Length: 498
Ligand code: GDP
Image (cartoon, rainbow, N blue to C red):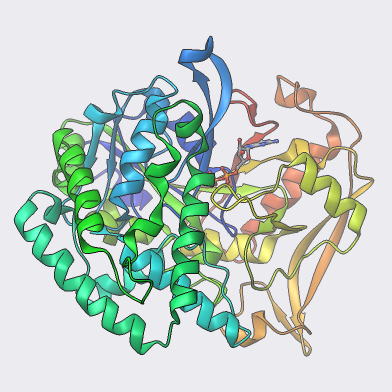
């Protein structure tokens, strides 16, 4: 990538990816990087992701509060041009809600600054119900994957099956109506064939309603919506049998289509990037989730359905790999994961886990589920640095580790005498309960570092910890990885440049 730089004439393109199991703090990094950017583009995933940024609540005295974004790039508070690329899957009802949500903080111009690629696939109530029905069946077999039930997996399956609806369909109300009708009929047959009972069917819609009410609290509190607006039970057929209420679904999606098209932002995002680069602009590409959730390279089968790696930006946005100048990896100073699946460096001391949990506020941004916590795992971060060809790492949340006597870093795994410096490609090995993480133990630090202003004022143990992680990440990699910034608190200014 670096060698192409001299040959490329215009523009700068930066991709930001999570190099753990997601929730690394990408939102904060994107928010910070977007200050210099002309265009910020989300390349993959759907509203199963949750990026938290601290923003000024304009309607509430400018007080800094967290804003959680699921679909819109984490740059809305910077009032920059933002875009959703073809690799994303968009729930149009969720998009309309999220635009109103960010407007409630005072960032309503997002309606003018947002572009959505017409090629982007839609998540509809069909995919949401399918997500829940499939998890129901997996749970029955004792193998739930811990999906966020946002319909993302089935939406990507619809892309692969070539049955998905597209954002382009929102531009054509008649066709949207016909396609919805066809898909609802097919889906009804499928759900009946799956053996979903009418009781389970009603429960799924009741659960979706509960989920929507929880997710949209702010809109209800601000009286921008009523509870009835999130009643998904109206989408089920009125006779209580497995089936849909076509009229209610049609009305909801036509309404969303009308709103989204009224923003006039449905346009070719690949071409938008081309034009921005032609004008020597700076483009920031935002990934969702993390490397270990990538559909091909993550901890199978507990992965998301999209390509979370930097390469996903190429396939998801219609750009070539050599357009990208810089690959930034985001990690926390420890490891977390939400949902089911392996976490080799899981912290076994309950009081240490509880402290990190609490201080780091480790609850899923989309689901509120508590995240499992582990020591920093240099094996996964190193593999992720390779998969993404990361040049620069942002190591966040080091403030959360204050007060620990000792801190461990996993530098390799051992399984049946075999040593692993990279994530085992055989997922049975990664999931093997005999997989032993091997640790280095470093001294911790007592001080609260959240108010330190200069790198040189950090306790030497913090500097030592960062240097050790950097050294471990660079082992056996062809590129040079540098940790150039650390996070010392959730605030937009709470980071230190090395
Ligand atoms: P994302 O999905 O990668 O954007 O990550 P999340 O939004 O799920 O989680 C990151 C959380 O950590 C957010 O609440 C951030 O405000 C917070 N955060 C980011 N950097 C730091 C940091 O350096 N210290 C602390 N204490 N919190 C941070």
